[in-house]
Image 1 (cartoon, helix red, strand yellow):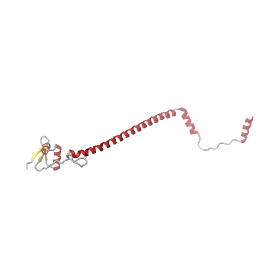
Image 2 (spheres, rainbow, N blue to C red):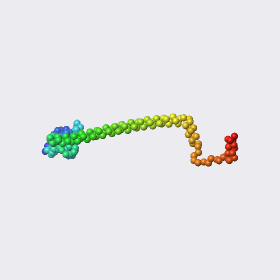
Image 3 (cartoon, helix red, strand yellow):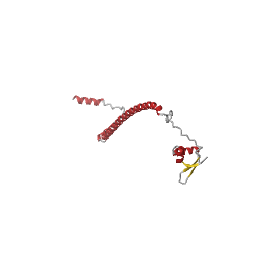
Image 4 (tube, rainbow, N blue to C red):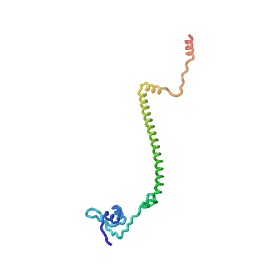
Amino acid sequence: MAIEMLSYRQLGERLGCSRDAARELVKRLRLPRHKANDGKALVCIDLNEIHQNPTPTQSPAGLLPVTAPQECIEPKQEATAASYQAALERERERAERLMAELLRAKADTLAARATVARLEGELAAIRSRRWWRWLARRKKRQPRGNFDVPQTDTSAQAVFTSCAAA
C-alpha cells in the first residue's frame, strides 16, 4: 500500500483520463489535498485502492453506446439522417413562407404609416386656414334641437300680398 502525492495532471496520466476528470474523481472520493509550494494541489492517493474504469458514454437518446461497432449504427444513422433532412427541408420552407409574410406585413405597415403622415399633414393644412376656424365657430353658434318660429301677423300678410299684387 504505497501512498503517493500526485498533482491532478499526474493523476490523470496514471488513470488514463484528463486533468479535470481526475480532479472530479478526487472531489467525489473526498481524498485529502494539499497545496504545494508552487501553488498546485497535491493529492494523497493509493492507486491500488482506486478502481476507476471509464464507462462508455451514451448517445443523447440513450439507446446505443457511442463505442458500438460502426456497421451496427450505419443503417440507423442513414434512416435517421434522412428523416432529419426531410424535417429540415419542411422547416426551411416554413421559415421562408413566414419571412415572406413578415416582409409583406412590414410593407403594409410602412404604407399605412405614410398614409397617416400624409393625412395628418393635410389636416394640419386645413386647420391652419382662417375660413375653417370661422366655419367651426359659426356651426357652434347655431342652436340645436327644435325651436319655435314666431308666426307673422295676418294683417302684415295682407300688406305683403297687396304689395306683391301691385
